[in-house]
Image 1 (tube, rainbow, N blue to C red):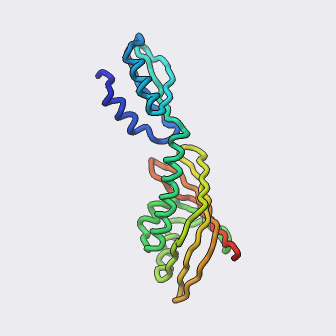
Image 2 (cartoon, rainbow, N blue to C red; image 1 turned 90 degrees about the vertical axis):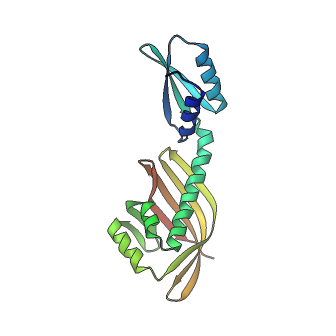
Length: 195
């Protein structure tokens, strides 16, 4: 099947994760088609490098890191806020989907490693309490690799239990890991800030 613009655009639309590598095989010898493909790739901030394979010339298509880091940063911040919204709405299925088990949680009560069953029990026991993220700010994101990101931020929250509401200012950190294409949080820490 000849390589054409439709195939190229299909590849570009899927080559979003940072550091992803795609292989394109083009009949040798080099032809004007190769020059056309390379120019198209460069227009999309894609960097091709050449290799060989039998009677074909192979182009390794590697996405540019700078462009995709912005996408990943926004994605992780959105996921973190989605997690807080799910906690506020007592949406256990969403929280479970976004959590890697066993997860490690650290705060003023110490450090705990929590499996899924224990997590579900804790979630059920706090069904009459509410915790709401009022404001999240100063987000700092460190992209370790295409599948591992660390996030830190300030948060102002309202915690209601037994009819009493407390306002807390904290700094939080979360780790996010991508497994089989899905992001999950294996670590979360909270440190209360004195007012």
